[in-house]
Image (cartoon, rainbow, N blue to C red):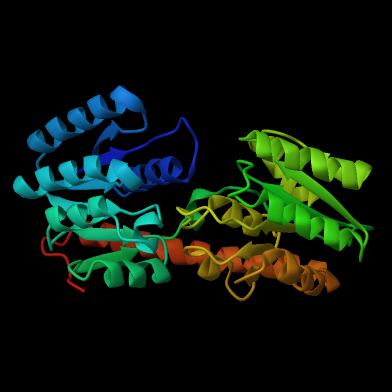
Length: 347
């Protein structure tokens, strides 16, 4: 039997990128033959505090490795306490970063976290840009490795053989202005004056502003607009089958490596997205286009380019996913190997 790994982090439910990442990593470690002990840190409020207390006790009793899926923003104070306890007990420590907030601006909790974790802690990030930004923001970090999110999605791919009579653009996610619904609608409305399009939106409207935006686009596009609300897994698969291009104009401050982009690429749907976090390397050269400024203005030319040969664009998107998936499995092997090395390599 290999060493035991204490896995601390959120698990589904609820389902989101970080909880899926923790669940997936635990499953991969189990398949690799590691013994596992876990504490679910997904609860909120007082229950979150109690869960971290239970995690702290487990660290004090645990013998081998400790993996922490880090909280974001003020929750990093709790993660810092766990990391410091692991360091004091001489545990080998891996910390997984899922948010870009502490890399976009300096956060006191993040500075305490990296200091308390110590120089032997291994920091896991979601992309090479995130890795570079981590070392720029926190020069004391010595050891890091990349593990992208491509291995977390399972949207099936059906090769496209026919071009639709009308180009179908899509938007999927928790619908807020910050996540890009206004920019997506402005883009679609402008596109509708130049080409024959439909617009499909999936996900719950989170605010009154978002509900107003849904009403606005329904009024403008009429029967060319299809709002599907919250989607389960099968409905999500149908969503990606029904669209040609996914719009992802997010300005969310924590955006790092959104799963919806890998879901689209997995289904062979090219993506037009804003440049946030690791999105540029996730989309890559084949997966679509990344817009660096004035999304609604510049996305139109990107949509036009991708739609000229949408069947090739779809194949390229799937190819980008396959490249990132192969990269993910290679990166996981490097992570697993680091568990078996008593003195992890320093950067």
